[in-house]
Image (cartoon, rainbow, N blue to C red; front, side, top):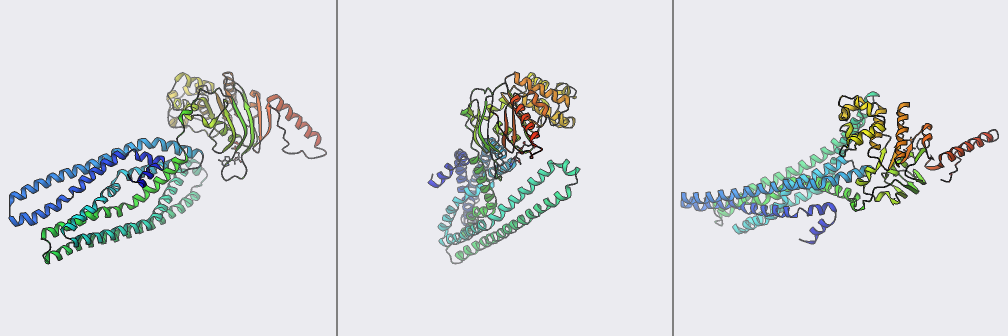
Length: 586
Ligand SMILES: Nc1ncnc2c1ncn2[C@@H]1O[C@H](COP(=O)(O)OP(=O)(O)OP(=O)(O)O)[C@@H](O)[C@H]1O
């Protein structure tokens, strides 16, 4: 294989995956060769019928060559069918090989807000697969055979060979021109189409909010603007493609008729038989068909190529995680050293030089005003904040180095926006792994949910869709809590778990937190409610991304009290110094 081709397959993971299909493509190439060589059969048949059968008036000759041609056609049909089947199967396998990888990469991209939505990545995978396994690719397999047909035309008469080369050049020039002109508009239209779809889907997801506050008109106006932009771009792109297709069609008609005319000239001159003339006409159409096919499939080629490039970029940006980094289960010892968490588009980091330690069997309550960085800290602790500097260690090892699939069951996380997924309540609590009924019930009990679930008609097997209408905000939060508790994690982070809870719910939560502590879990509890301070071993107060106060609970409380008293005494003379901070030694 030549260097350029090898270079292509070596350049990325995606290209290397395609390289694994080289055998299939080779066999497709062989079938294409058989089919293309046998395409000469109709030409030979025509020659024989005109020049031999009609001249000799022999029915037997006609029968023999007809049967022979029939056999060739059968082989040709078999070769064409086989190559299609092979490609379809290769497509299914390609999808099987890549879909998990693309799923993981687009999931990670979503997590870091760095990539296009997952759905787009799957559309791209489908586009690449459909191109590689559809009609478009045949043009590439058939094109190399055009020279053979042109060679046969030269054999019939050099003039016919030159005419076919002339037409081939015109067609190729048209394809090249088409590519240059249509690539940008086609890509712009595809992007605009995706934008419109994604915008619409996003709004449909929030249909209740939109409806309740009468936001539809405003949103429709924004959607209409995007839609109009898409229509305009698509119209421009289509108009151009149609123009190029029309020119291509015109060239094809000219070629079909003038090839016959050129043959007729030679017949008049006595240089070609009538059979040769008809055969040359068929042959020339055949020789130029792949080029014509390429002009028509150019658009899908461009689409597939840019989809390929985007997928390649996505996979490169999110390489497969090294599964070898799995380790013994963590005990939950957490150390953060000089952690700085940033976000794109923000001049200042969200968390600034944050350091803390938490041991197994302790509860750290994180307090602080809105926007002080508590939820960001929760994500850092879970290892899902993309842009972190400093050290985040779990059992003395960097969190980022753990195998996510293995670490996941040892972590518990209750985010502020609880997302429950399609499936039963039990499956949601069991995190969609194999449901261990005892563990599910234990987690539900701890979250104060068990009795409530039993009151549902299908109990733990109630689908989330149905339960969605049965569950209140507080109950959803408790299902989220049970999911976080499930399987006795070593480290658990609860981000405002009591936001929607009543007093009973809050008591159940505090009970659950104490149980977790008793089991040796490292608990982080982020809250606005002062009641939670009662269960804390240590307190961490954040203010504007900084540690305002940190240390054992009683010491921090005493310090805050002393600070408040000092401020109260100083008040008559001078205003309090807002934001005075004094991190306590842990
Ligand atoms: N993905 C993000 N990109 C940019 N900025 C962000 C992102 N997430 C949060 N922020 C900003 O970081 C700051 C801290 O946000 P965070 O959600 O951590 O605060 P919080 O203390 O949990 O607030 P609350 O109590 O209201 O939940 C805010 O100013 C917020 O605007």
